[in-house]
Length: 193
Image (cartoon, rainbow, N blue to C red; front, side, top):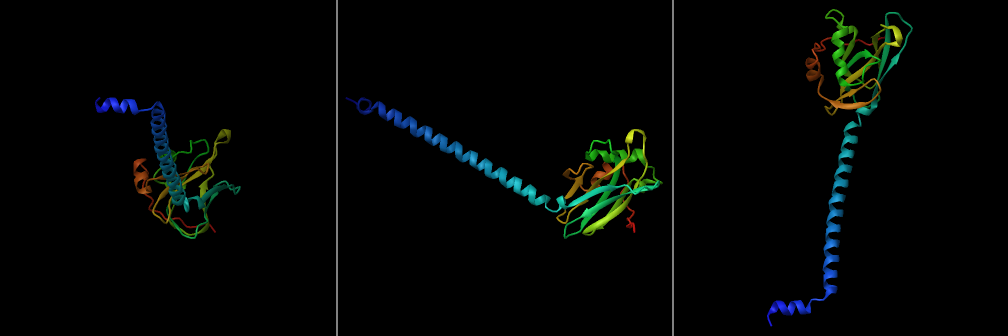
């Protein structure tokens, strides 16, 4: 009798079940390990995103109607302990989409002579509230201007907050503005008293 015949005779069907269960257990363990690694990676990414936004979520802006025919006001609130930088506030229609590409509409409203009427630039914005003038232009059907903002936090990350308060990471204003044909902000804002 050769060795293969002896192995066949000694191999019990229960052994097949044991081998099959062992292979399934090993495959299940491997799949669970891969799944847990993916969950851990996703959790780390979410935490990293939250940590990255920690300063940006404390910057907001809102519209203030001051019952003035010439201008309305926008309040910009930086409730962080640190300043924010390269703050570019621009005014778009309240019917705009609330996307970064809304900034392209500035060139439709403004000419070189009155461009600063439709946007404001702050090189450094300290903690606290700051007010800016916003055009009071109105149109039929309730259309009016509303603000959107681009700013850089103290970690050097640039953010866009739209008219609805949504926050997203974006490129520097020195990359965005030329892309949409907007002159770089060389004028410095002076706060309204």
